[in-house]
Length: 422
Image (cartoon, rainbow, N blue to C red):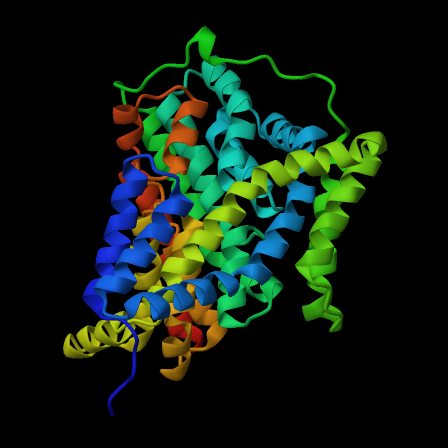
C-alpha cells in the first residue's frame, strides 16, 4: 500500500541539520528550528503554501503543552524564590552526611527535579550546596556535577516537567501514569549515577573545589515541612486520577502547589512576583516548544517515519525499538530533552501505536531515550550545568559519556520492563 506524505525524508533531515548548525552557531533555538523547518519543507518538495501551513499546524499542536508548562512556572518560581528547593536539598544532604555526600547530592537533585523544577534549574539550585560539601569532603567538581546531572536525569523522567507533559500529550496518555511508568528506570539511573560519580571522585586528575567556587548560602530558609508541602500537594492532586478516578489536570495541580508553597512559607505578598519569576523561567521553554512544533510538523508529514520503519524491518528489528531510538536521536539532534521527546513523540506516536506498542509504554521509552545524549554542546543545558561548578567547555565535555550511561540505563530498564510485562 502506498503511503501519502507531503515532504521527502531528505528534505526533513536537511531541515533538521540546518536547525542544528544554526543552534551551534548561537542563533536562538526557536528561530533555528523555524528556519530549518521552512528550508526543509521547501527542499522536501512541499511548496511554500504547504510548508507554512504544516509549520503552523505543528506549532498549534503544542499549545496544550505550552499552557501547562506556563502554569508550571508558578510552582517552579515558588520553590526557588521561597528557598524551598534549597531547603529540600540541604535537608537531604545534612541527613545523609558527608560520607554519603555524592548519593545525597544525587538524591536531592532527583527529588527537586521530580517535583517540578526544571533539570537545569535543579542543578543550579543544588550546585552551591554540592560545592560546599565537596570542598569539605575533598570531592572533585566533575564527580559533583555528574551526581547532580544524573540525579536530575532520574528525576526528570518521573516529573511533571515540559518533556513529560509533551510526551503524554503526544501519545494521549495520563501524565501521572507516565510519571509512574518510569519510576523503576529512574531508580536504576540513580544507582548508576552514584556509582559513576563515586568512580570519578577517586580519579586523581579531578578538579578540586576552590574557595572561590563556593557561594554563600542564604540562611533564611523555610522549615522542611513548609518547603515540601507545595510539591506534596501537587503529587496528591495528580495521583487522584489513578487512585480515585478524579482527574485534576496539571494545568490546575501545578499552580495550586505553587500557591500553597508561597502561602505556607509566609510569602503571600510576594505571590505575584514569584509567579512572574517562574514565568520568566518557562517562557524560553515555551517559545522553544513552538519552534519545535514547526520542525516536528515537517518531520511528521514527511516520509521519514516510513523510511525508518522500512530500515528496521530490513534489519529484522521489532517495531518497539523505534521508541527509544527516536527519543535518543531527536534529543541528540536538538540537545534538548523537551524538544527531542516532543519531536520523537509527535512524529512516531501514530506509527508505534499502529504497530501494537501500548501508548504508555511507548511514551515511557521515548521519554527515557530522550535523556541519553540530550546534553551535547549545541544546547543550553551543557553550558548552564558546566557554569554552575565553573568547568571549562573541554572539562565539561569529558562528562558527556558518563551522562549518556545514566540515560542509557533508564532507557534500557524501560525497554526491559516493556518486554517483561507486554
